[in-house]
Length: 540
Image (tube, rainbow, N blue to C red):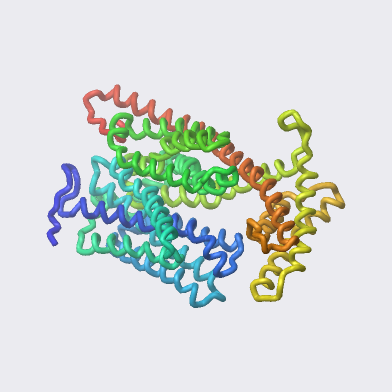
């Protein structure tokens, strides 16, 4: 195949820029689709392998950590190892990750570890795609870095939408077994491999400008500007990725279809990133970041107060418009202002953004949600003009679970399914008994453990609605389960919304930083009216 397709003026000759860009986009879709698939198959995995919620959380964390970790470690080595060699490594890890997950069916005793390893390995491949393709795109489109990086990164939310819709269609057609859903990502893997094969990957800007490997580290890690941008990346990633991970369960606890809200947010982000070019040219990169911080913070704050589907739709739209440009524009700013940092600068900035969200923002939001959830469960005061004591209501609901679940467990038969169900119910009863013992002894309900007792009781309770053949014990247990759900879900929703409210003020810090950068850029532009001030490039 000819390697002579040209790049726009100022670009790199001898490479097929359009083909490399398409291959990069499809590579990004592969990881994004797995993100959606992983969320969709949780229930099936729990049922087939009897996994706990904690195990599911650890399994998902493999994907959350593998992606930024590979960016952080392999990003600086792109020029040393070579882009083509790393692309082959990404293909291998994407295929191996799928194989490990599907193979869990053959070794059920080790299913958790196979699934965890599969998620981790597949995410490593997705991180490699990011680590390679960010500097690749910045190199082949040197005069349109921010615009092209936005176009590239539109396919992460776009891939989530594609993966989610594909899972939905498979489930509706009755052939949506989880192994097929996981195997779907092999299709885009094969496509991006085909597009990359035989192509020439150019040296990065750092290599072309003659900056040494050691000089790359000095120009990156010792530059105050880069360190400032690193902090900004942690905050922008927290505003974007932190809430997005919690939106489905938080909104669904409030009776709103959270997965559809997430699909709307990610779909809108994809469309807006596609048309990022005119926005960046009109506002410049720092102007885009400044406006994004303002709108994104307002949108998240609105979402934290939204109480019905209409308010949620408006708030989610504002939030999506605000955060859609954060990640790719931050990469564009780093590439423009720290050009000698090369792949190291892009790898570190992306990797640290993901790691900060995974190890700081997400756990912090979970902790805040737990605190406010428990406050709702034990609230004593006035609601709508009437006095309430939710601690007593919560304790009463747990006592109802204890009484009815005990009778229901005793009424179960002796089949293998009944024995398994009885074991689950007894586990729930032990948890409930511990909470009630503390309540009787101290008049207080244990923080965190009370909500956990509710969740275990709900998960192990009868599957309703009860039919005419159901026993009286099963009907009573179902009533207790429904009462527990009616108490837990609003509290869960309130806790999650409060976590959004605590993250939203991070936008104020970003507004100050990006505002100063934007004003400085404007001053430089006015001071050098004859200079070429391309969007995203500071004058001088």
